Amino acid sequence: MPDQTSYKLCYHWGAWSALCLTAAAAAITAFAPVACADNGSETSSNRISGRSKWLCSSTDICTSEDEQVAGVQYLSNQFESQRDCRLSCGKYGSIWPMPTGDECSLSHDRVHFDPWKVRFNVVAPNDVTTQFLHETNRLFVSNLLKECTRNCTLASSKEVLVKATVQSNSLVLDWTTDESYMMVVRTTDKVTFVDIKAPTVYGARHAFETLSNLVTGSLTNGLLLVSAARITDRPVYPHRGVLLDTSRNFLPLRYIRSTIDAMAASKLNVLHWHVVDTHSFPLEITRVPEMQRFGAYSMAQTYSRADAVNLVKYARLRGIRVLIEIDGPSHAGNGWQWGPSAGLGNISVCLNQSPWRKYCVQPPCGQLNPVNDHMYAVLKEIFEDIAELGAPEETIHMGGDEVFIPCWNNTKEITDVMASRGYDFGILSFLRLWSQFHQRNLDAWDDINQRMFPNNKEPKPVILWSSHLTDPKTIEEFLPKERFIIQTWVSAADSLNRELLQRGYRILLSTKDAWYLDHGFWGSTNYYNWKTVYGNALPSGARKDQVLGGEVCMWSEYVDQNSLEARIWPRAGAAAERLWSNPKSSALLAQRRFYRYRERLLARGIHADAVTPHWCVLHEGNCL
Image (cartoon, rainbow, N blue to C red):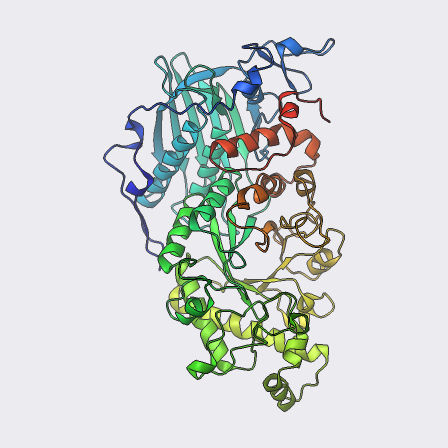
């Protein structure tokens, strides 16, 4: 199989007008057969009774034939393993997240096939989308190989022909992108046909992910695939994200890529990259190299511009946007301390002050200086770099949370300017100063995008965290709803979401008592298991375009690469189903699919945490 580095993906960032993919000498359909390593993961499901068969009950529980329960009805089909049974036991089998369309039917019969004998036919309107789908095919085959229990090769394999048809010639991925798909699997005496139809390459990509959920390893060689299926599917919410903080503890790129891989397996589509904070500024800003020079923990703990560009490409091929956050005016310390020596004055104030509780909510302290014009000029150059990293449709997250008013109130140059403008020093005056900070940055962002992407029809909205500035009583005075999307991080019981929706704002949810994955490891916070994550309901009753979706958040004060994957996964996958399907059913009905989803993550090299004793996985329905 060609190494991933033998593929070259090129975007013309100005217009994203071309995507070039140079394959290695062998095409995807002509890979030489290799043997897969025995991962041994399936053998435990047959430990119960040697090679006993498995049965699917009328209540959608897979049981070893040696452990049948008297009085329970079972399908006549017999399956070689629990995973084989799970492929079609229940309406949704082992598909994660749950499909949302009217059609989801799965055959109980199987096709035994060799993954090397899968052939692809791509029907797309231009070279860009065709090449994108060829890369999708390659990733799909790579994931299939990881499902092999023994040897992937199979002497007498059915041929599997996969046809993917895409209508749109666009690679645009934003809140308006159609990610729906339709898939039909049918089998004749000699061939299994898979027909995928989608409006966009991203819907087709999701279809291939679902197709991989219809496959499991055989206890002999090769793989097993459901022989017939019909699925229609589309996400409920267009923004399905994971926030990853790489400032408080630096994360090497390969761990960010593994996060993206797990997101792709979960049909999540936004990596919110909280790349900088007051602790460190590891991202290279080519226009302002001082940011990284003064802000990185070390030169070994940095992300170059090329790193960032390649990460955006890596994510996009997996149907994922990279949304970069440049936090401000708070959370801006290390990286900003060079202003005085450069003749720019204090572009950040309260830097590294102590005792820190008098100057910020978390050490080290640092807050941008809203009355220093040089600070805005530096920020605009940072925004220009960020705009060049992404596609024309991509926006930016401008932070905006946890502004510590006493810091500004105790900084003479700020209070002097406020006094000269006729401001008093009450909370409303500081909120006005704070909102002016965001408006000036929004104007800068608009100017950058108008110059770089003149074909964009409308200005892009930007995202801010909920804060004192987003208080429903005053938000309309400070933040126009047409331009600012609010990401809320309040508790599930808080009325903020409802009140913002009533005022016409668009929101993203990061419910802190369900979707903050760092909780339970510091202070008086509580750990939220996957069922709590799954049960986090999104607001109803608003206009369809107001609740864009949400994100689980992995803040990194108490996590680094040594604990990252188990902290995020598989819990983020529970949020993935909430955001894709918004199911009415409980986690109890989803748990068997969830256990299988976790096993797929493990097969793909993601160190997902255990969520139940393995005995409970093997003995379905006995640990309720």
